[in-house]
Image 1: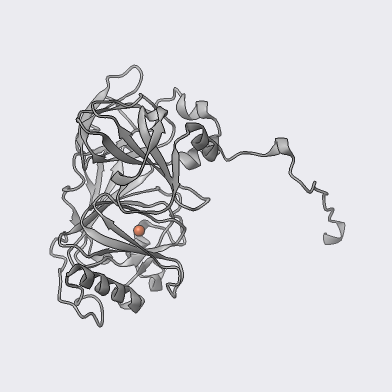
Image 2: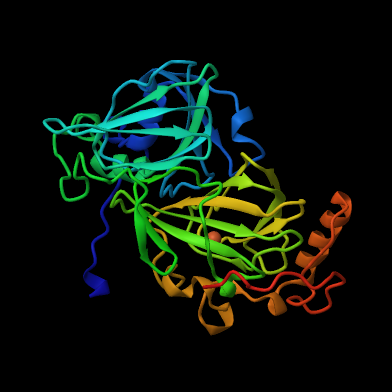
Length: 379
Ligand SMILES: [Fe+2]
């Protein structure tokens, strides 16, 4: 009962020896590598790196400005004809190659290693806690961006030895010496299951008319890992429908020119416009942040989205089947007819600046443009 409640007396200042450090932040500091806090990057290839001994090259770690970090991005460059240090770790890692060509060796102690070759545009996943080493076969530096779930893993375990020197082998996820890095197979409609995509820039995609004008897509289940990926592409003069979900979706631009809008307030007072081209990256920084992507270039625009699995995508705004359903029906998506008119005005202004034409007349009420693509590539 309230009248019996005893209130403990707490010291006014925290005790110095009782401070629990953020294990992930502490690890970043020990790595002595550059850490960048932002969520929009015009070109990942132009970001300045610092030495990163663990990787045997140079690098930077990218965090969104959000205390809750479901994942992070490791930007790494391997010297011409150089190689990375062999490593394994208890966090997952999905790798997209931004430049260069080479090969990667993946293995478990006591098993035959797998070896596969990559080039600009390749996308692959390191099986959890498997050893791996990258070899740059080019005369130029090779650069990749890897999205990992190191932040939640380190914050939970708080022990470097557990993370980086753990002998457990996930045989259930990775069967060494099999065809795991050999291209994979279509698991079901739009879902591809593999550990290696030779070139994400030209991988065939499938229709998904619910997400907007002429867009096509493939969902990727990589290396039996929990982190997810997908590739989306949309035509010239169009844009996808806006939607929202949990934080941590890293969108690496594979082709095209355009921009993304991100906002959380209905009146768009906190709207941020992020211009991009091939090699750029936009990250969904916070929970339920609306985002929308626009093609203002002369070619189709394609991106690779690297995102957490279940974490951050739980109901009531779960990714799952609600990702392409109107917010009016309990989903996460803003239908074209419901969007703030400022959105389309920004798009038309950007098109005019680029000398391009809007092709959204069939989709957006009041659009001044032309009739554009239908979903002729839908399956
Ligand atoms: Fe999204």
